Image (cartoon, rainbow, N blue to C red; front, top):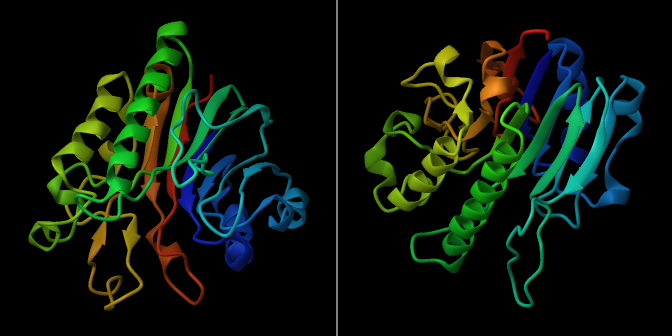
Length: 264
């Protein structure tokens, strides 16, 4: 079974690339983020024709998460328990969706960006991650044998080698101690970064900004991850970052992260 995560940066702009990638990659379950579409705008027909069921949560032209599966899609859940809201008035954003696919409880997560050190959005990000930790830890406490995949754009580079030059990020979000601590807390709750052992750094990234020739200069960040529960992690037999998908006209600024699971 092959699962993957990909921030597509607008599904309407890149559905042709997504469909083509699904055909080439032989992916069974794809978690996507930043769909930038509401429910009526999501282009499902081509994906359905390829054999994928779709669960999507999108409210407007911002955020948006989805799960595509050709191995079943059941028990869809919008948001995790007690997921924080943001804004004035506070509202829940389209940042989390879960579904059971081929025996795996898959989550597509789009962690808040944080914007800047000292910004209220960073407080929101940290609160969001803490509530995710509580929810995910609770799932494992209830069922230690659960196969859970927390997949998505985490907007955190948890290690220094996950950015092209730490000096460039000295006063930035994504690498701050509180953000890294929040990521580490989810790992310590029982989850494993299952792709890193198969895609070791340094110089291995999942995101490259569109500006300043970041991609050809290899000025990237590793911020997209699949965190697996113990039962899921034990099935991992390989992983890859499809850097080629960042190339060419109309590419997302993120690359897919693919994880290969042994059959059970």
